[in-house]
Length: 394
Image 1 (cartoon, rainbow, N blue to C red):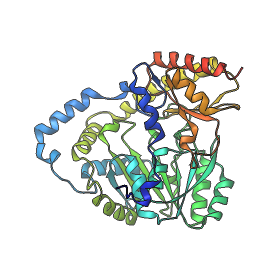
Image 2: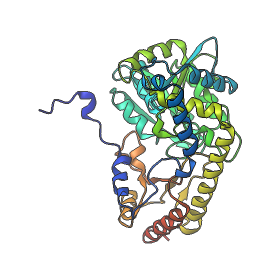
Image 3: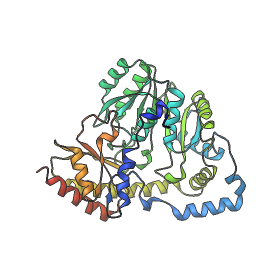
Image 4: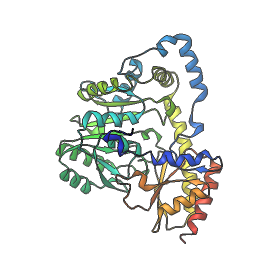
C-alpha cells in the first residue's frame, strides 16, 4: 500500500544528501557539504561541561522540559539579541528549536495556508525550500544580484501573488551563493513587506562567521512594526549535532509556534540546551567566535586563491565576506556534465539547480564549500576541478 499524503508525494530527497553518498568513498574530496570545520568544535570544553551537568543535575538533563526552552538559555539569547537591536522586551519573545531548520518548518506551519505564496531568493537553501514545499506552499523565486534580491522583481512578485505569506531571505553570506544583502536592499525588502502587509523570515545561521568587511544591521533590527521573524542557531558557532536554534518574533507568533512545537518535538533536547548555556556563560564566547572567523577566513582565502589561479578565467566565483560557501558560474555549456565529471574524478560539488525554486530551470552555477575539507584537500580538489574545467574551457 502506497497511500502517501499529497504533501509528501511531491517531496524528493535532498540533492545534497544524495551527492554526499558519494563522499562515503574516502577517496572522494567533498566540496559538497555545509558542515563546520572539524577543528572548529570545542570538544574538550563540551566534554567537561557535559560531565559537570551529569554530576550536578542528571535528572534535570534527562527529564521532560517546557516547550519554550530552557529558561537560562532563553534569557541569554534575549540579552544577546537585545544588544544587537533585534529583541524588544515589550513585544517579542524567543523559543528554542531543534536547529534553525525547525524555525523554517514551523513558520510555514503557523503562517501559511495551502496555496499561499512564499517568496524566496533564487537560488536559496534547499532545506528551507523543502520545508515550505511540505505545506504545499507556492514557491516564487526572485533572482539574486551581487548585493541581494532584485528589488524590482521582488515587488513584481508581491503584486503577482496577493496571497503571499512571507518573504524568505538569508541576508548574510547566503547559502548557496555567499552573497551578502546590502543595507539598502535590507531596508527595501522591509519597506515592501510593510507596503504589501507580508512577513519577512530572516534566516541568519552564518552572521557570526563574518571574517571580512563591516557588519550590516539585521533586517529585524530595522523593523518597527513586528513584521520580521528571526531564525538563529548554534549549529555553525558551536555544534550542529546538538540541534539547538531559536526563533525570535512578535509574541503572538511565538505563542502559535509553541503550539506547533507541542505537536511535533514537544521540546528541544534539554541536555543540548544546558550544554549550550554552560558553554556561552562559562567560556569567552566572543573569543570562540573570533577563532572560528579566523579558521574560515584562512580556508576561504585558500579556496578562492586556488580557484582564481587554477581554473579557467571564464568561470566566475563569488567572494564571500563570511560563511561557508562560494558560488561558481560557468560561461556556457553543461553544468550537470561538469559536476558529473568532477565526481567521477573524485571531487563532489553541488549542481546549482538543487537550490532553485524550480529545479528544472536552466543554470550554469554550482556550489563549493571550503569549511569541511582540509587545506590539502582544497589544494588537491581544486587541481582536479581545474583539470576537468580545462577540458571544457580555455
